[in-house]
Amino acid sequence: MAYNIAIGGDHAGYTYKKLLKKYLDELGYKVQDFGPGSEESVDYPDHVHPLAKAVVNKEADFGILICGSGNGVAMTANKYKQIRAALCWKPELAKLSREHNDANILCIPARFVSEEEAEEMVKVFLNTAFEGGRHQNRVNKIADC
Image (cartoon, rainbow, N blue to C red; front, side, top):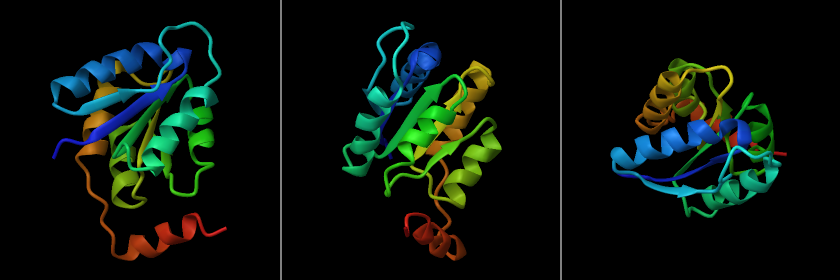
């Protein structure tokens, strides 16, 4: 199944965004780029909010956000009740974020992972299904506030 993927971040994640966008294109995914368009300094919420809204509105199946630490983009995306943005720095974390948390946005810390690790996390994230079962009740409680 080829998903529609929303991708974005900030200036620190720009190089990885370009790399991952090309990688996703080669794998046959439809990719919507939410910026930024260069390494020039930007405010990440300006790119995260539209991306998160696209995932909420089902205009994208999943999102990928990249910034220096991954924290800012994750915090911003998680302001939306329907978003479960997971900050991951290893493929195993990307896998568990999907299996146990039904994460719908992968957040990557560009300054702390290699390009190869970023590609592997994206691959694992997009190819791992939510297990449901005992995890569903927990996921239901996340936005229960």
